[in-house]
Amino acid sequence: MTSVLIIQGHPEADSFGTALADAYAAGARDAGHEVRELRLRELEFDPLLRSREARGGEAEPCITEARDSIVWAEHLVVQYPTWWASTPALLKGFIDRVFVPGFAYRPHETGNGWDKLLKGRSSRLLITMDAPVLYDSLYYYASSRRAMSKGVMGFCGIRPTRVTTFAPIRGSTERKRANWLVRARELGSRAS
Image (cartoon, rainbow, N blue to C red; front, top):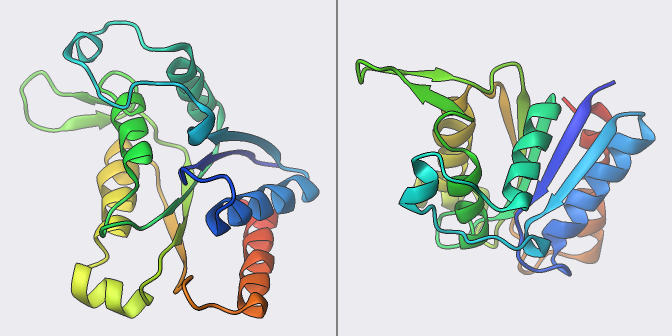
């Protein structure tokens, strides 16, 4: 079985994205996977990376616990909505604070390249958006998906990263949303 960390990056508890993350967690648990969850909206942390911390200063306990959970996990799941062709500020601040040098990567002393310190893990992105996926791909060049899969996960050595997009949320029917929840649960049961 797989150790799974689910990071809920939606700032609203009653969002459809939260329901997707919950469905994924239920599917993973039902299949016997060990699951931990981080609901970013419930954590109290400064989303700004301060220079003191970047130079090795102490972080809030929830940031340290988040790093411990990432080390524990074999598979990371990040659920978030695409807002303004990007992630919500809450998730971006979390990434800035958690995925720091010395934890997620280590620059080479020569200044050329870096060591990827989170190798050996896979990830899945569960993304919601109001725009159709094709529109996001053609107009915004899938900026949110690329930033998370390549710019964060890949940069730190987390591979592969699989992306599942649920869209468009706005105007979707109850039946469509129910099918999406079934899909999220099925993905959770495989948890890889």
